[in-house]
Length: 162
Image 1 (cartoon, rainbow, N blue to C red):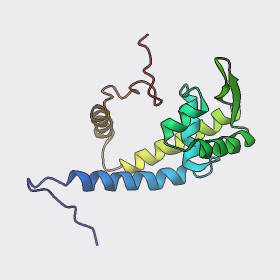
Image 2 (cartoon, one colour; image 1 turned 30 degrees about the horizontal axis):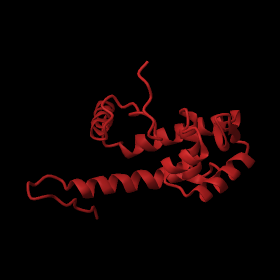
Image 3 (cartoon, rainbow, N blue to C red; image 1 turned 45 degrees about the vertical axis):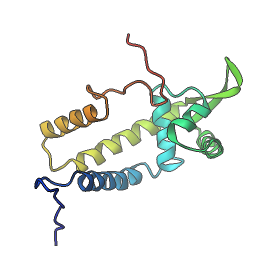
């Protein structure tokens, strides 16, 4: 039996309910898609941020992901032991560690991104290609990224316009 979607007083589908349903559907499938990545979805997030230019330091990465620094240390220990990242001293601050992807980390990241693209395709399966593109564009506008590109770095450092 299909569940009826709640509607607001204007008769439109309830925004919060719809957004929550979409998020739960996506997250469930996304966690499964990256479940084999060392560290699971958090490990994938570290690889994704690092692949995109990173946050620089281990501390900034932890802050960006909302992960306690101690937890981040253990997560990076796992990723490093798996050969996916390396930590190196920051030449500007020897107390800080910079995170870099290894070649193996790049391959794992690329594979996981492909699996997540399939998850997205399935989650947005009720839309045709043009509608899905429009949905992503509108979602980007709502989240402050009109062209769909990152608005600065996930670490809060605004990238220069080149």
